[in-house]
Image (cartoon, rainbow, N blue to C red):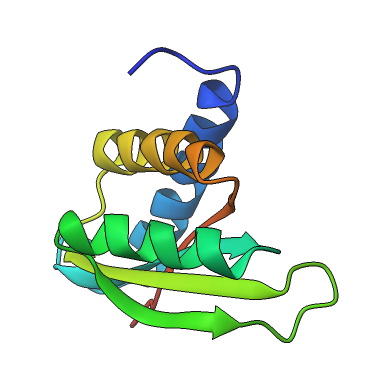
Length: 115
């Protein structure tokens, strides 16, 4: 993947999130459920992206209408993994790139923290 102008920003955000997890979590190295969030005003585009992510062995938590005033459709994809900085940076960069191909917005990721 070629470097994006967003890469330094993504790296900083992911580093801060992972440091936060380490500070609050009893076991930051445990495999956990990570959700990745995408938005679109095109139903076709959001479903095409969902299909693509399923081909990458990601599960789809939700794909359909959104309650947002900004975007009509939302896709929440799910993957169990141990979030490490390099992996999360690569995933975020890839998701930004693939979202652009499908004319969808990638909004980031989240996970549950259990102290």
